[in-house]
Amino acid sequence: MNLRGLRIAIVGPLPPPEGGMANQTLQLRELLRGEGSHVTVVQVNRPYRPRWIAGIRGIRAVFRLVPYVIQLWRVAGQVHLFHVMANSGWSWHLFAAPAVWIAKMRGVRSVVNYRGGEAETFLARSSGIVRGTLHRASVLAVPSGFLQRVFGKSGFSSEVVPNIVDMERFRPHSVPRGNGVAHVVVARNLEPIYDIGTALRAFKLVRQDIPNATMSLAGSGPERDALKSLGKELGIADAVTFCGSLSRDQMAELYRSASVVINPSRVDNMPNSVLEAMASGAPVVSTNVGGVPFIVQDDVNGLLVPAGDHTAMASAVKRVLRDPHCADRLRSAALSEVQAYAWPRVRQRWIEVYAMALSGA
Image (cartoon, rainbow, N blue to C red; front, side, top):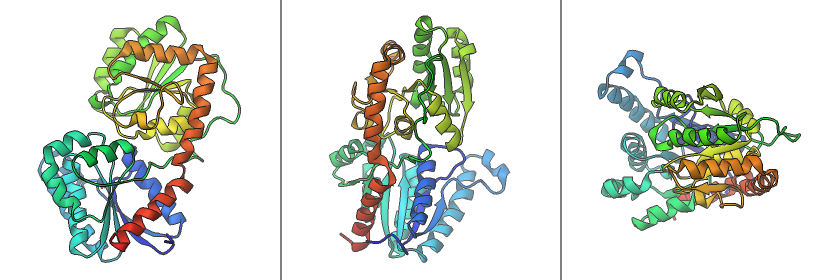
């Protein structure tokens, strides 16, 4: 199959705000267009019009949903295939499911690209509704063996297509970084699911042994004020920078400046932040949740710790910061592993999945 000339609609979010799914949507659009495909994005997070409607819950959903459904119907008459970026909860019901049903009604093949880390809970609660939608999709694609296993338990077959890492943007420094400053980076949004509080508590223990260590938190979210207060309580506020949401280029620079990147998440699938850190030459310390062990092998290309255990997290971070040989070994193995997420490899998998969908197999 040739991607050139393929007319495809990607249904998903776009930045801003920056985020894993939004960045994957943007990146896939750019790469497919580079292959000669005709790509239309049906954006699920378009700004509300009029803007003041964003402050009215319930009603604002209608103001977004109605033009969204109209656009789906119109675009379905212009493309060969829908590529639906899907997540759990209301995102599934309001955006993914309507796209699949409209594609079916319009005689268009659809690929559901499910990317949510909370799939197990979601399927346990809504498997009947999800089953009705997925039976009308052509192919279910997931980014990890972890999600393939989760869907398999509920009787759904799926194809694994990894996330894409932009190796030109996320790359190591051309010259070795200096060893003078210990810079710890967390690149997750400030939300309960990502457990940034545990990372702050771990950093306090790191500072006790490495007083010049600094931390950067790249992300936004509802816990910002609470986390700032926690930093003050822990006595580390002067060493912690809240960077807010950063562009992809800014994130790449931040990763390259990192001595170690922490992923403290409680639930996860295939976090782009971990893959991008690996591609940027930053050693990774992550919780061993969800799909993370499918990409990070403990003490091979990163270090894994139990979720919520700030003591174990601090010990792992200090090991990386104090042992240059360990850091170099993890960095080298990660750079080798992450090549599997480069476009030339992922491109072939999408070609196979699209061919499967279009053939009706």
